[in-house]
Amino acid sequence: MSFAETVALGALAGFTIYLGLPVGRLQLLRSGPRVALAMFSVGVLAFIFVDVLSSATAIVQSALDHVKHHQSSVAYLIWLVVLLGGGFAAGSAGLAMLERRMRPIGAHTPPIAGGSDVATVEAPEADALARELEAARRRALRTGLTIAAAIGVHNFAEGLAIGVSARAGAISLATVLIVGFALHNATEGFGIVGPLGDVKPSWRWLGLAGLIGGAPTFLGSLVGYAVTSRTLELAFYAVAGGAILYVIGEVWNGMRRHGHRELGLMMLTAGFLVGVVTDLLITYGGG
Image (cartoon, rainbow, N blue to C red; front, side, top):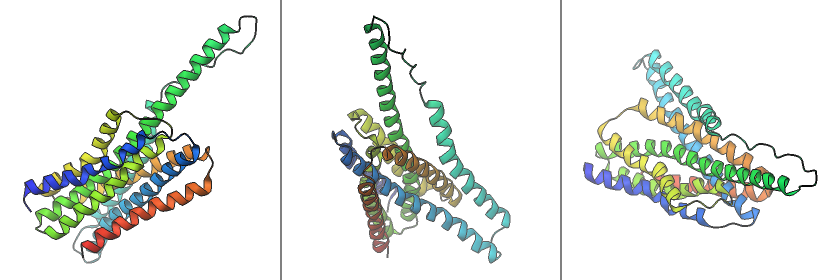
């Protein structure tokens, strides 16, 4: 497979993420559908988390096997373990610290009602409520972009796999990976917009979120075709795993106040199974 074909198909695999993003424009007035969509996205993210960590630990275990057979040094194995832990911490705790720094200062508490001039009290209360709603809207959109960034890091690692397979001449495997990742990325769009709740994103925001989440597949295919580095791949898997775990916790906490626990858990299972099925299709096609 030529470099140009790899680039074109890598772009196709990455930008199918836009197929699921328009769902964010739907106005879900009831809490049930909001919880269902958000928890479905958590299920998809949970599968991606498992997939990412299994890929990361496979690299470390491979290095361990090389050490056991005296084909690699213990220092290199230790370096991979440190890289795995450091990348995971950067993706989870790093995102938490970044989120705290980006969080706007809360609205000032409005004065207690009283006195004859009620209008002077109601106006500040209305302004405070409007500020709080706007802060909540921005927080939801920021969470969506955080999810897109976490998925983007994961997709970069997937792009590396596409590029490496194409460069090695494994055309059938590369083709299956492209088709499978394209299908998988289409479900990741739900993972980005699901936690937005009743916030209706603009088309511009959806375009940016798709670019953040999907473009890394394209970029990864470029890097994977030109450079083969298990260390680089492990670093991206580790950061992606930590970031996805952080996002899952944020979405889970946000949905608890809406209730519908049983519905949410069923949709979480459905999202996880969608990820499993797409992964099985990739594995089966790859032989």
